[in-house]
Length: 288
Image: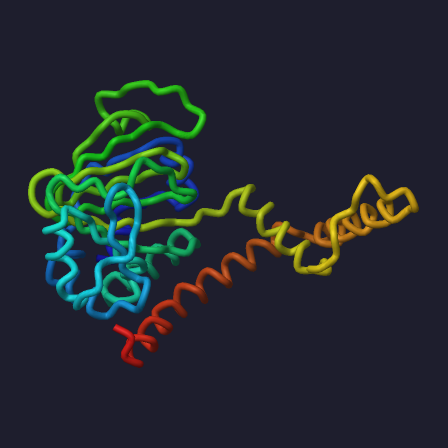
């Protein structure tokens, strides 16, 4: 399965691939093996989950699933017309763990893989956007995806959703869809039980650099020191503003971009590796 990354990128670098595809929804013309997720592997993964790793999607919202044996959840969800979502399933399945690491090595971004199982007609989540880029890999059944455009775009209909960020398309086993961040979407299962995986990449952006920088500044401020107030006329306000400016300038010294990239690369890889060990250790203690 790790060959998927090589096939996806072909002779392109990850940066070139992003430049070519991140502007709009894109469906791969090739086909992917469908043995990544089936009922059997889904049941096996659910049996290893820790508290909070599985939720029940009904009415467009995630909810705590009914109290019952974990192995009964998939059939109970189908009977109730609800969808099941398994968070970070790559920590529970060795094959998907290898895929997560392959994407991490190729794109330099932390990868998170969730699994969704939906009975016929189930809609799962309500229309929403995600703050990260997502590869959708469909493995069983069929599901119709509704694309409502990027935030701030005027709705323009497209017959073929791969021509833009609006319209509808049906995914079948083996289909791979790339869904850029901030495209509003929803999906609904058609005939039979539908299974798909979402492989989410938290890509580095200028916006995420600023978010990190704000955290760095905050880490160097007194957490209980109040914000400056214009009503203070004894020089306190001016001193407080100067202190904030100094804190920001201090974090901007040196090559802030290199610092940020080193932080992202180190933390992402360690977090991805650690997530496997954390879930395995927790499951070994009997929290099922």
